[in-house]
Length: 325
Ligand code: PBG
Image (cartoon, rainbow, N blue to C red; front, side, top):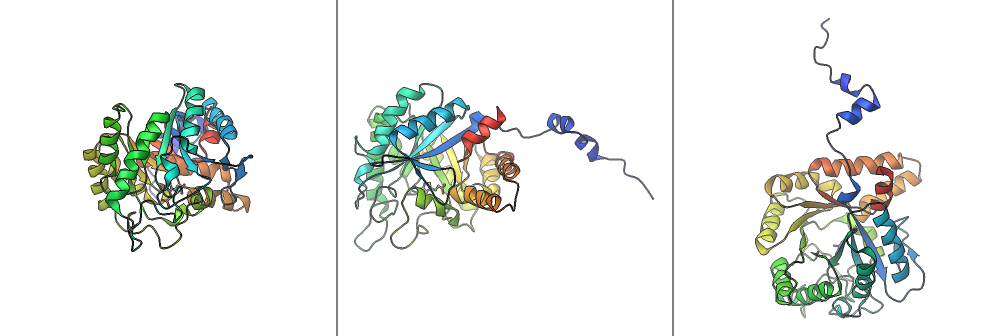
């Protein structure tokens, strides 16, 4: 019998040793909290498929944003649900639309304590639930949609958004938004591209949260095929060429290989979005007593960071930031 010379277990013997040699540490400042604000409701409404997450009123949004900031969360990203939807998503760039109202409130509240970001898309605002304008035959039309995105970007920046994050996966969206922002004098507002965004089943609960399930068809003609990884690099490099300041991979958990490839390929900050379905799966399994909720949350987040994400969008941002202290 020969005995091992190398004994990796030596460094695992105690909690203090494991902490000392830990390669990956989570930090509240890396977290971005996605928040939903809905027009025309008088009380925050719980989202059934996302226990612990709410559709906020303007008031409850302020309170929850304040809590996130107190906990040290680095940023928040707003999603709006308008009272009225139409074919063009008119609420999205209305200066008195729900996102613009929320931005004006939060700008005053947050100051320089956290970065105030906005998701830029049309699906929450359109009656058909697609991320762009439709042609007569019901296809999402890329180039007319870009004009809408340009207008939304300017409305969001004018209302106080500090980072614009286009999530619609239209070709050329970053350039269209960059040009529009620059033309309106918002030269210093960064763009965080949802660059590598997959057509994912893990967005299911979000569609309840943002009331944006497509009324027909799906998003596979504009979001990426889960089978493709090289295509993500193409999307990321195009976004950088068009002027993106931060690039994102979405979802996170099932795409950690993509996070790593992107991290190795670019020099800008890389964000990963732990999406609604990733949240719901852990919450549901934990509610059934099938997994240890807190450990599973921490493991999921540390894995995203280990894969190479600098920033993580997560619905657990406030809770985990508090735990990290
Ligand atoms: C589109 C958008 C979606 C999400 C963020 N932005 C939904 C989609 O593409 O269908 C999903 C986020 C999540 O699931 O948590 N505006």
